[in-house]
Image (cartoon, rainbow, N blue to C red):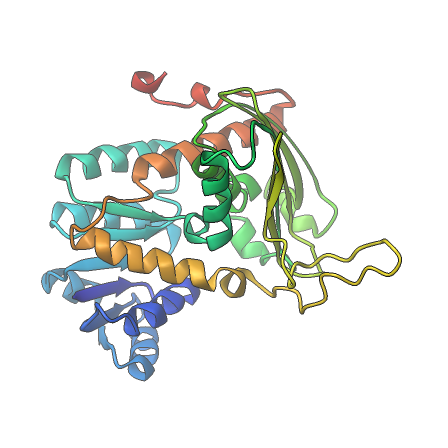
Length: 336
């Protein structure tokens, strides 16, 4: 396959390394608005540096979009209207209205699109999903999720991130739908500013808690944090009548027991999301290449991304207004 990568920043570099070593990829074109950055990334990987226009003109078999958020919508629509299967990092667009517009234009082309929610490809989440579906957990009664970064992002990023629910916890919202097969009926969110002042200045929080009620009545909680100095902590606990499973509870979980004589987990804590989810990212890109070849349906569509965004929008409004909010309040009329 001939694959074009758009964006040579941190996440683009990660995808470039995965694509360069994938057996299905014969040629990788690396493009960035800054040609020097594309050259620097492409060279060591044996890839070909290019300008974004060159990528589209060359009609690759697939494109991977890892550019800044503000460019996602335009590039995704352009790829699909050119008939090129596309993988796009989340978010699809900068706003809910723009996301709806992209969804409609992409759907009209019939070209496959996969959105980057890598937790769907993590072995732990997949195992928990299978256990729930085949009855090993019994009747699900309770879910708890944690996403906590070891250090906060810089002020300039927070100012344009959309807030902790849209930027960070949207991964929890997406994987909650995927693991349970349920929709979120209502959201109640709170937050606090315990760290740098720039979070509050951006109308954001650095610690959050969300109560979510699913369509079957199951109650879920999700906690987010930007100052988890112990390490990168991502977990999902599912408690049913027949058992309790925890995703992310391994030797490298950044946890310490308060019980005397208990020293587990004893491994070095996860440092960041790339390290924690390296196998998931590899599985995600491999799956996309199969999608682009027509060998599999997209496992994470624009509609899936939209559903997670509606939950994030509900959480954002709930925190600001101090009330419970239904994601359906933000849904397009035809979906209500």
